[in-house]
Length: 192
Ligand SMILES: [Zn+2]
Image (cartoon, rainbow, N blue to C red; front, side, top):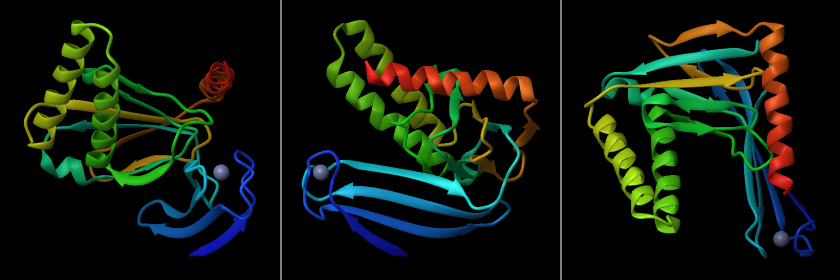
């Protein structure tokens, strides 16, 4: 683990921005660099994961059917798209996207946390109800009940789902170009 300090570009804090680089070796994937940037003063925080070896742009599909599937590893870089169609979940890349090394359960936990925020800010009863319904489906999945599909697509090849039963497809150039446009659109949206 390697630590570095800088002035924070957001709040201007002197040496308050801590940058931590951590190299992790992931079996069946390879070495990745996990970077966390954190300001002690304004609490700005960002993390990302980038593989240290060149990898193919790929689409990974996993049918979550039982508790064993929850422990399959997920490497999520900020350049990836995550879809769980059965839950209506879509996580898009962009500068605000967080990268992480976790497992399927960890991805579900992150979605669950986002839902809590959405429910808290919901403007209608219907939105609240919808959020609660998805939360219940996540709870069921975590108990090995129900099924869902986890799809992870990374046009830069920085992400993966690793484990038995995971379907892998290499993206062709056309798909990669289209998805990269999606990343740009997202960046513009976030600036609004
Ligand atoms: Zn700061």
